[in-house]
Structure formats: structure tokens, C-alpha cells
Length: 330
Image 1 (cartoon, rainbow, N blue to C red):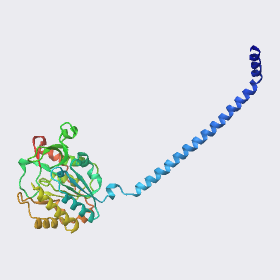
Image 2 (spheres, one colour):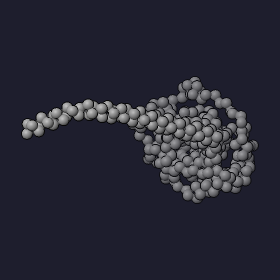
Image 3 (cartoon, rainbow, N blue to C red):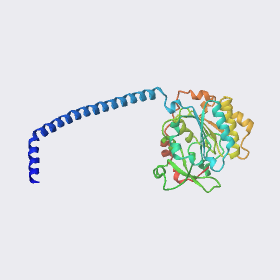
Image 4 (cartoon, rainbow, N blue to C red):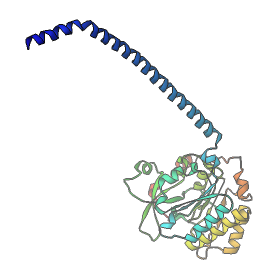
């Protein structure tokens, strides 16, 4: 056993130089292999980077060659918060039919889909026509039967979100949103007013806005905020309207504006002549600004001039208007 062990040691010593040379050769080969591998990795990484650059360039070119959503969109929106308690499938179907007939892609938002987030994004979504079939609130104690928008006491648009004092705290503290309750109803919803419209993302693209609920043009401030945001025309009732009446009236109004291509003023006359006035409230449908009442829908889509409206926040401060001291109803 010891002899064998000794011989193995001798043989090992004799082979040491050989093994060393093999180890050096292997080490050299490893270095060559590493260099080749490193070169391949570098080449691969460079190739990936170049592919990325090419893809990015193509995407950038494609994006720049295509109009943005706001510029290219040809859409119409029905914001139907009233569908929570007062659904009207026939009105929705007619809105879709008329929109498609004039090349507008209709999009419908109902009930709980009518959120603060939707209102926040809506100017940037590329709509040319928006119908707000929503409750609209004003302080009930100051609502008067006037035939033109008054100054002050802004109108608010209901959302489909039930009010929660612990939600949207910052927006509540800054008066961007207020709680509003339906008349003869128990539910209280978040609602948004002119200040919120000013804070919306993006701008309208000559959008025609129809305020189908009560008192949308009781005062001018909400309409002003839409105009400042790029809307071209705002139409709305000057005080209360009944639900079944406003659906019939707005349906006839849209048919005159979109399909018959009459002026806004003529469309209102046709609507009033055929549908009549609200039998209970005898409410007038107003056009704002009046300077654009003799234009058609197609004409306002091409408007280039902008109406400059004084910043209404300054006005609020000057009259000392305190919204928190008022209760808002539709």
C-alpha cells in the first residue's frame, strides 16, 4: 500500500509540468472563449440597442404622422347620470342613431360610470357633441323664472357617485365639488361646478354642449367655464323642467341640429313649435353665447376664434359668495 502510494506520488511529480501546461492552455482557451463570449454579448447588446432605436424612431414617426385623440376623434358623448332612477332607452337609441348618421361615434356613460374622474378627463377625450342628461343643481331659494342667464349662483352637474364626506377631501375643501340632493329624493351625490370645469384636463375642441337637466343656463357661470375650456356653444334650460318633457324636447333639438342642419336658433324654434313648452314650468331653452345662435353645428366645428371670458374666480371673491352656506338641489 505504501509503495503504491509512493509510486503514485512519483508519477504525479513527473506529470506535473505536463499538467501545468494543460492548465495554462486551458486557461488561455478560457480567456479566448471569454473574449469571444464578451464580444458576442457586446455585439448582441449593440444589436438590441439598435433595434430599440429603430423601433422608437418608427413609433415616433408613426405617432407624429397621426393626429392625437383629441384632434382626430369624431365622437359624441351622452353622459346619462339620470339613468340611475330615470332610464330612457329610446332616448339613448335615438342619440346613437343620430350621431352615427352624421359620422360621429357615440359613447354612452350611464349611472355609476358618471364619476368625478370621467368629468375630469372629458375635455381631452375628443368629443364634438356632449349631452349631459344629468341632474343639475342651483340653490332652490334663488331660482327665478328669468329669460336670460343671471350672474352668480353657479349651476352644478351631478355625478353618479354617492356623497361621502371622507372622499375627495381636497376637492371638497377647495370647493371643486359639493354635495347635492335630488328634490324629493334622499340620495346625496357629488356634483361639480365651474371651478371644477376650469381644473379639467385638456381642452374641448369646439364642442357643442347640451345641458339637458334642470336650470343648466339659469346662470352663465357654468357655461362660461365650458367656453373658456374650448366649447363653442352651450344650450340649456333656464329653470326647472320635467323629465319626460326634456327628453322629448332635446331629442327634437338634436334632430334639427344634426340631421336637418339648421342653426341653433332655428333648432330651438322648431323644437318649441313641435314639442311645445314644459306644461308645468314653461321653461325656455337658451343658447350661449347668443352671438353664435345663427351658426350651424358644422359651422361651429370649424370656428377658429376663441371667446375670452374673465376669470370668474376673481368675481366670486369680489361678491363674497360662500357656497358652503347654501344647499344645492336639482
